[in-house]
Amino acid sequence: MPVVNATVAAVFEQIADLLDIEGANPFRIRAYRNAARTIGGLGTDVGTLLKRGEDLRELPGIGDDLAAKTREIVETGKSAFLDRLQKQVPPAVAELLRIPGLGPKRVRTLYHDLDVQSLEQLLRAARDGRIHELPGFGAKTESRIVEAVQAQLSKVRRFKLAVAAQHAEPLLAYLKASPDVVDVVIAGSFRRMCETVGDLDILATAQPSAKVMERFVRYEEVREVLSHGATRGSVVLKSGLQVDLRVVAPECFGAALHYFTGSKAHNISIRRLAQARGLKLNEYGVFRGARRIAGETEQSVYASVGLPYIEPELREDHGEIEAARTGRLPNLVETADLKGDLHAHSKASDGHDSIRDMALAAKARGLSYMAITEHSRRLTVAHGLDPVRLARQIDEIDLLNRELAGLTVLKGIEVDILEDGMLDLPDSILSRLDVVVAAVHSKFGLSCARQTERILKAMDNPHVSLLAHPTGRLIDEREPYDVDMPRVIRKARAARCHLELNAHPERLDLLDSYCRMAREEGVLVSVNSDAHSVHEFDNLRFGVGQARRGWLEKKDVLNTRTLKEVRKLLRRPG
Image (cartoon, rainbow, N blue to C red; front, side, top):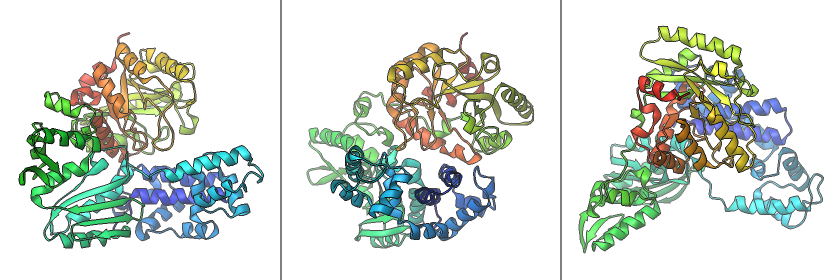
């Protein structure tokens, strides 16, 4: 079975962690972390790129050595270099880096001085009072370690949606390839497009069921078989993701799919509706007495309680049942509705590909326009553009648009919002652009009042078209900054500015609750890829999933409109 991008990225992160603990060259460590970010964020499977004969060295941050190591991992599933590192430092030691306040230097001390090799050993050492006497530690640090380790050990591991997809979709294809399978669907939080996934629930109809279950447990990525019966099985993949498979009868498939898709709160509410009608609803069907009256399809389940079909992304018991009852369910936006992308980067800043290549990739995905929005000058780590370089890019895009057919490249910038709310570039150059995407990239720790005022002031600038990744969060890595989003949304409405839903799998920012708030306030949301390479336009589907969770319809999404309509909406009244 092919090695997925998340696996390659995880290997490079492990290498970086172990090098960090050993005190290796910081530039070397950063190279592995950047490679993990690049490959983990690709919209196309790296194995597919290799099969096509594409040169991995053309990916950002991937040189000869990392390209060779990537090929080795894809072809063998292993890394000889990681194996060597793990003989020097046990791999569990790297988990200690996940504890707040434990950097590489402290982890190195704990390992070499106390032989601490796991979270459990760390907790024991802290409780025994053996840590506070070490150089660089203290009693307060020791106490904080106990709290942090207990919190970490109590956490249930969850996978980002895009990472889960990299494991789920090959497994689904593997199961579908069986001639015994009639139908197979991934249910659970994955089907509801939740930001993170704890495990995978797969439902299938098949004849005979035992053969499909046997095929399931023989999947090459299975690390451990937890249970194996004729109609139920549970495994843990090499990635650590647990997968449960149930094979059900065709007449029960809809009821089982509804049950295992969830959410729990939604299912309880639907069951109560059934009980009020004298019905019994479970994973096997809808019953009146002993007679099954529905359950072959999900539509039949909802119809039995007097409701129209409710899309999986809405099933959170957040008002969708009342909306269904009163005929107010939204007609959710679909990926095919998108006509453009208003946030992408080229190699002029921190992207990898040329503007032409980015344009052709967008066109190949059915888009009719895209905006090139490089970083502005303040973001030096991303080789941001100053006014002179931006002016040259404006001219370059004008020339390119004369040659391109079927797609228009819009001239834009992702301009930094400075601490005082001013923008990183002058109005004289911003006025020449089609799209100005304003973004916070620094000073995340400001108070709610200061952060909010900073953003509101930036939105006062009449050249600002969009507020990028409005909360600044990185899923499981960085909490949202403290900002009054209701005020920001109301300001967007008043200023006729728009909000971005950044589709990058690590962001998915706007949160679904803020998407819904924007919809209620009449503020348009733009679902953008923030693509830094030609492969990352494929991430738009995750942004659309988040938009659907936020109840957004086609009319609520800015970039479902034609180029002519978008140009008009991007121009704010002066």
